[in-house]
Structure formats: C-alpha cells, structure tokens
Image (cartoon, rainbow, N blue to C red; front, side, top):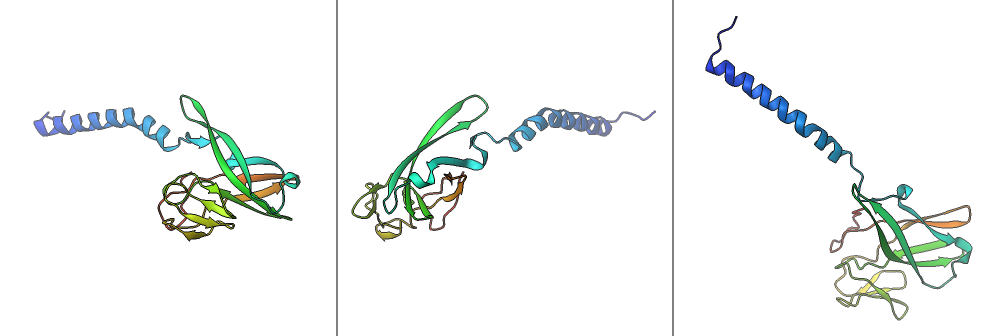
Length: 166
C-alpha cells in the first residue's frame, strides 16, 4: 500500500477534476463543432428561379428569393433580392447588396446606384464611381431540366476581395 502524501493526493485530485471537466464539456464542444444551424436548409443553397426560357432577354429583372434558415430552436425565412440578366443561354445574376457598406442597390440609368454612399455601377455591375471597393457580387447559376437555379451566397462588405460569409 502506498502512503498517501499531500503530493499524491493532489495528483489524484487533479486527475479526477480534469476527467470530470472533460466529461462535462466534451458533448457540448462536439455538438458546437458539428453544428450546421444558421445555414439555409436548401441543399447546397441552390434556389429555383423558375423556367429559364421565361426570363426576359436583354433586360435586368428583379427576382425576389426566400429561403429558410433553421437553428436549434426556431426557423426563420430570409428574403433577398437578386438581379437577373439573360442573353440567349448566358445568364448573369447579381446580388442587390452593395459591396461597400451592405446597402441595397437600385437599377438606374442603365446601371445600378447605391443610395447610401452614391456608388454607381454600370450594366455589368462594375464600379463606375463611388467608394465601393469592388463590383457587384455575381452568383453561381445552373440550368437543370429547363429551370434556372442560383447558388445564393452572402459576401463580406467593405473589402476588395470577394469573400463568402455563408
């Protein structure tokens, strides 16, 4: 039998407390690490914009979209606006969020204008004037079985490089 000294007692006490703390916090950390809440529930964030042939050619169209974000306790519907432009089989989809400060841009004079800080973008979404650090953000799109899908993403405002945050 080993003699219980103060040092042996403290070592065993540290081991017991450490094991207990790990057992208590490990499930929470595991659940937090693998959590996917706050993400759109649509598979890979692809959103159906309707029949591709019904998108008017050579004209910017406003397309409202909505999707559901589910977290542990509730779900919420997020509504956003996209601008869609089609020429034959080529489609351009731009976000309506200004890359400068996150304000909503509006179509104006063959382009887009941000009413907050007066950034002006041409018809392709490139910056013409204003403080915007980059062009309007474009979205990835695909046509599947005659329907136009967009992969919706949000991008960080105020930076020169397009950085996805969703």
